[in-house]
Image (cartoon, rainbow, N blue to C red; front, side, top):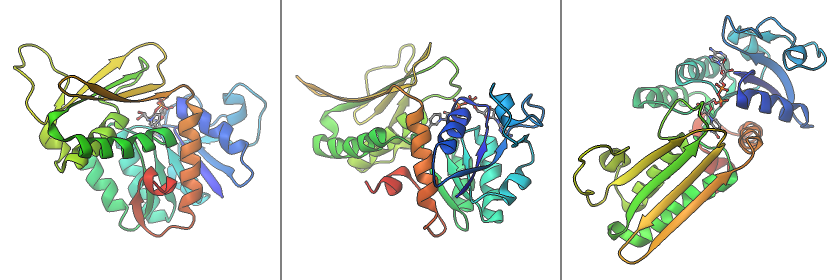
Length: 265
Ligand code: NAD
């Protein structure tokens, strides 16, 4: 399978390059960076500080799509929305790890998924996707007597909050209660907020240092609390999930899929 990496110099992009190189069924077909980035036009191996390898970093998305079966994309919402459309038109499958989308972005991606093949997940790890399933079950079992709070921690460079994973967990908790997250989300309290509204799902974001990603889903009742927790300690976890999604897409028809589909959860 010929795989292209969008955002090749990024934290996730570099991890993906290493993983694809080590995979026997995958070949790195193209590596893309934004126009004007220092890596564009350079040999990828040299740009990564090693030996040259005969593959130049490009800013030409059409060229990258033209020589690839799948493009893996951990960039920014605007880049990903445009790429979803272009990949669908080119018949290239699209694995989306980017987070921070607003509703209009999600609608545009869903539209691309009518003809294109997409896996989109705010978190690509097996453990978090299992946590999503458990969160839904626990929310359903406990009911609204238990207040749900989602606390997440990420490194200082992260630009969006709450994290895509926190929102996935919030969606799962809301689904377990039979409500829409948008109607009950309480994001980042500050000031004289008044007492907690029954049924709200609270979000809190810690940013600092080199946290890779930690998520707690707290169910706080009278006299007891349950916490579901996931801690990521290696970024390769997400890259491995993205690669798994890319290989899985080979046999699928058009649609926008999640990691729950890929992992059969
Ligand atoms: P990063 O800033 O290190 O990397 C993003 C890269 O995209 C940069 O190298 C940037 O130059 C590049 N880029 C920007 N515009 C581009 C364009 N037009 N064409 C090509 N490349 C372009 O960020 P990161 O830590 O790698 O994270 C990227 C995204 O992935 C974030 O939204 C983050 O939240 C998300 N993420 C998701 C998961 C998951 O499991 N789904 C895991 C980690 C990170």
